[in-house]
Image (cartoon, rainbow, N blue to C red; front, side, top):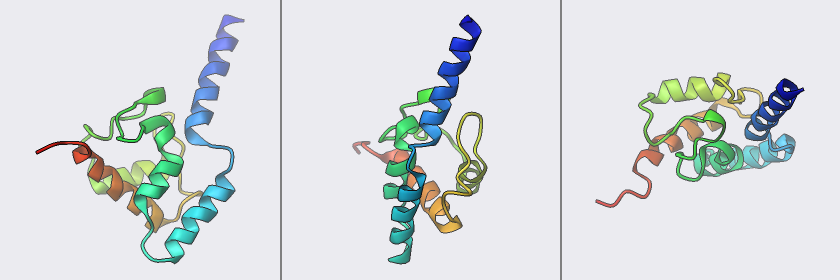
Length: 117
């Protein structure tokens, strides 16, 4: 019984981080931004990624990587967003390649977010 409770709890966390329950609406909103020009990586990040990674990329819910500290290259980030990793949902069916690239580029900006020089 205890194992089932743990399993169900972990499954709920994975689903919460990977899905907001209204992918169609979110994908449509992201698609409208893409039609207006270059996709808005920050907007897409806030729609899909904040739940696990947090506003500044350092929340780490459900084992999410700290985006402010990771040294993944742009291409590696694109691969992770596209195919997923560990508990992270793959976004290849939710976002197009330009949107995925925009989010990956935005995550690179998080390294310096809130840093005073």
